[in-house]
Amino acid sequence: MEDFQESIRILNHALENGASVDQLEGHLAVMIAQREAQDPDELKKAVAKRNYARALTCLKLDKEEVNRTMKFSPDYFTSGNAELTPLQASCTGLEFAVWQGDWKMGALLFVHGADPKNNAFDGAIETVLSVAGLESRAILDGFDAQDPQPVQGFAGLRLLVDSEDEGLGEAYLYIMECLFSGSIPLHREGYRKLAGCMDALSADLRCSLADLHSFVASTYLCVKRAGLPRDAALLVVERAVLDKLWSLLEAFATRGIASEEQ
Image (cartoon, rainbow, N blue to C red; front, side):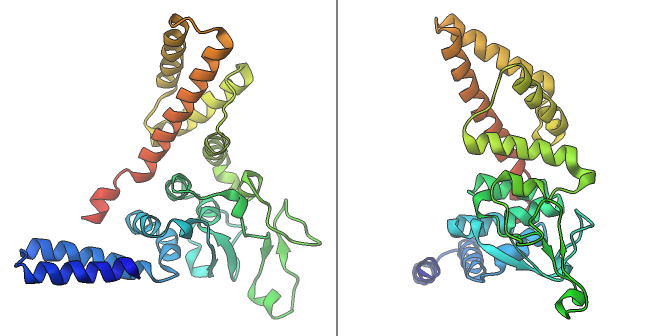
């Protein structure tokens, strides 16, 4: 509300000082965006409709919004896991994006602070018949059928991935989990896992497997030439890889949003 009032003040000041039409339109656009962001369902609508520009505006205006629990009705479920089409579901925006296989939105929410410790979906699938008491709620595999509760962390997100999207979903969640923990194993098995994920995501992240190999090798050679012992060198490479992955994921999340806003 304070941001909106400040926009009103700026607009009045601009009018008093003979602002151009373009300047006034710019102020009005900001005011409209801020007013719409006051709608508690605005981010939910943006996430559900895959409106990345609107979602980004909401996230910039209210950083706390990213981890809020939202209620999604059936008309919001347009793709993703066919087994998950409930009458109503309470979940975070990140859970919904994973649920729908919308990895661009998932990445956008993640780089703006979405934390899977706030997972809210409890695995219960409510239908018209279950609400009417004519059948039991279905419980998604992996959740406690006796006492449905949200599964926190990336383990909970993995339960929502569509089986047909499993390879891509696992790749995205593995990269996100490494970035979230601030650690990425570069030993043989760990690097093989990373390489497989990058190969699956190369088109989205615009970074080929060859690019990854080249980046890791050149970074390692640079730090070795500086005289660092092997263990210390690997720590530097790990940090460099994490920074690289973050920049790639952020670029993927925000790519094309500027053109959407025009």
